[in-house]
Length: 308
Ligand code: NCD
Image (cartoon, rainbow, N blue to C red; front, side):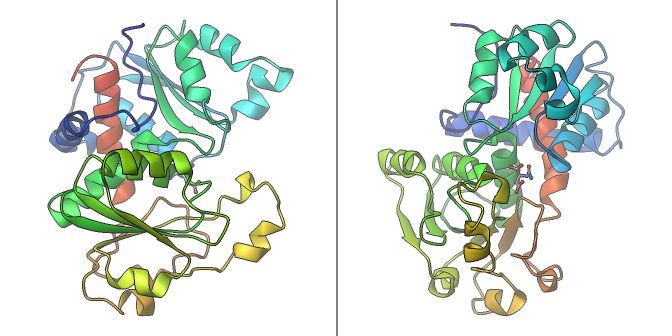
């Protein structure tokens, strides 16, 4: 077994490990905002290698590394402009780029790609999303946002709504939160439910959950509402997009049915499922998530490099 500290998912991350990363993230706030200058990672170089589009994940990893005093090399469109276009395998690409850097941030369209990359890499792999599997840095930044907004990760009812079958962020945040005293309600169109392997983890850990396709009743009981986009690029049948788009549109009137909701999250980008009239709602925290993303990703880089 290799001793390299890869961060591939939250499925096996313990409550203590998660708490340590979130605490470290909060302690890095001055560095991550530029209020305090850091040279801590000046000898370290991070490669971001993305086979899928990204705005927040890549930029916030790179911001975090630069704020920590490190250096970055970046491949934003690996499918089109790396040797992947010529047919190079992921295994060969990883065994090349690990010569150039101390840590790799990888986004890929295949579930399991991060684990495969880790099996070849001589430097830590940070999974920035692998297909429909996991997106651990997103799950952790979601958890940091919830912890800041709610004051704790215990004693919460969390409702997740949308295309839960294909959304890796909701997989990771659910797995992470399952280490805490959280009850889940999953709201999705029929056929787009949370995967069994996620529900199995909840069962093993004794967490309560409900599944429904009706948002109205589910929302009344929630402390935290997490909305996600239909992952149109992952639909097996493209015609499904028309069938399910518009299934749930979370707007201010819907949220105001309840006076309990304190935190409204979205991994972003939103494309119609979360109305702009929610932006002024007191619990709207979805533009705090990208801020917290820099803090969490700085903590993950330090952890992976053995500097935490
Ligand atoms: C998500 C992703 O790529 O999984 N984006 C993100 O990292 N915030 C979600 C999405 O694309 O809908």
